[in-house]
Length: 173
Image 1 (tube, rainbow, N blue to C red):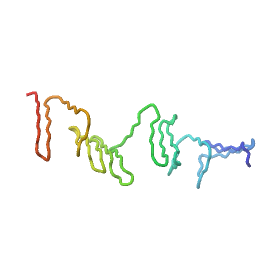
Image 2 (image 1 turned 90 degrees about the vertical axis):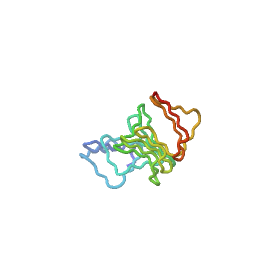
Image 3 (image 1 turned 180 degrees about the horizontal axis):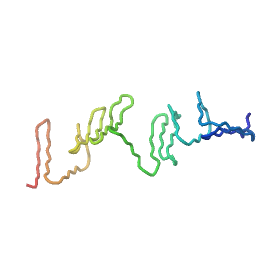
Image 4 (image 1 turned 60 degrees about the vertical axis):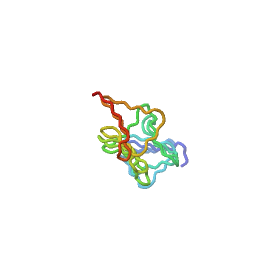
């Protein structure tokens, strides 16, 4: 009726409609809606909700946590996952954790439980952590000093096309 005092209140037990000081209660244990629900302003709910899809417009933020500690946002061009709380951000996977290109499903990073981490360039594996250390495929470029440390025997070998061109071994024997 255009009355600015019109209110609808939902609780687990009933729906309360009030307008102009007159209130009506509907006893209910739930509510099913077919179609769209449009609302402006804030929606506050408690309990658990189930959604088929949750859509937010560009620059809309999905806030999780009492202090909006975890935020997921898309600005129309880029997507962001932000840990704005005081703790750490943990990403957990049961077996493999992968970062892949959306359009091609090419691996960029692959971490396997109890096995290692692989880094890819254009879907070609370039660096892998292994039981004995690190395996690198391709050239290594750097600047500054190269410091190699180990305990026990030391061996530095340069191998070019299967032909050992330099071998330096320093051992304790």
